[in-house]
Length: 154
Length: 379
Image (tube, rainbow over all chains, first blue to last red; front, side, top):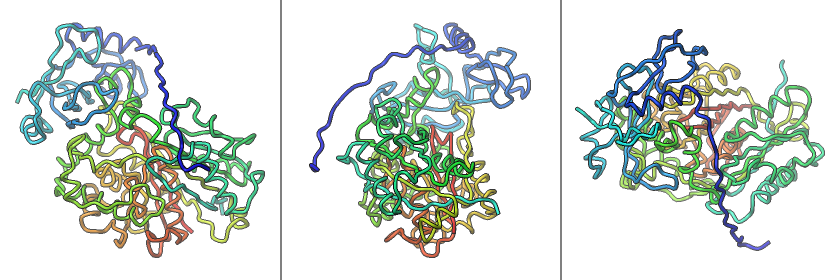
């Protein structure tokens, strides 16, 4: 058998159309109005964000829509500063899990609004427990990226 | 006594960055070698389970391409995606059902052929909430590492010590892909990628395949001199949204409790002689060690800094080099089981741990360890 192997290069690029479902549709309609909604589970009483039609812990349908705060605290964060195909934005950027006031679960989103020179300068601005506030885009399409990022407000 | 299932033999490729053989040739190679070593014909194989992932192969129904070359032609068989340790769990169940005496398990991944794991693991994320903000494997690993640092304040060199240990072990493993050693300074001076994780905190990806033969006890004793028994298996799956989860605790403590319960293990830190863990990052070996109960919460980093998890330590972890030695994404879990088997058999070669009676193999799948599986092997 030959020692070398020829390489065949190909691409797979296919369209998908995912139904958001009624709860996610409404959650993102509220984004247009700059409102972040959660749903209350009538059994465990937690406010779940993003709002959803059921609580998977209690395995019951949720029964109330509740607006949660635009502000919250950083549960944990990561500074992404390398490039890969399909990345959501130019590195460096910070991805965090945010505990919004009034919500009982975390929401992953970006933390930004300041220069990210290196890890040391970022660590001066961003810390676990640090307070943040949503910064909305002017033109909103009803999608997670209608929030540009959460900015530190400490 | 309840029926038992044993491992008869295990074969793996010399894993690499770019293996020349295609997926069919790799699977044929490991299965042919396994059958020759055991001395059985394909007609004696009862059932077959393979493991691979469509996104990681660029072929939908990835097994449709290699099913016959992996020995499954016109046999009862199926594929499990993503975590190849489920081939062991399902193979064991099929044998315990009484319908089969043997089960052939095959796993294969060629990471050199597919987009980067960062691109592909972003596709593990849902398209509505997670994918648009760049949630992927290394990002969640970084989120977990940051939480660990904040809560337990390990010294800066602790996670780097895991990399140094595993790379040093891999240098002794002729099947490993990465066989060069690194120093703590080299790890700590490598660029950050998903800070606090640095480039060298994350294993590179590999090409590789492996095959493992399971059999019920009587058949296993006919086929080999020294069967190694599956004493317990456990698995558990966490919630889908990462914000819904406790990323520090996750589902591993439940998976390991299930495996230990079946194996009759009460004090894993003392009773397990060696562990092969799927350390998807340096911090993950620390975190998974705690989830497996090999040490107390917040003590995982000490296993590396105090030398306990080294090849000469009291509880060697990843003597093969783990994923830092070879990281064929889907196949890596079954490789952990195979390496744990070799340790119990006493045939791991230069990375053999002395006097192994019980070995643990662990695999992980999903973002931040959404799914974990644990296998306990012994004589």
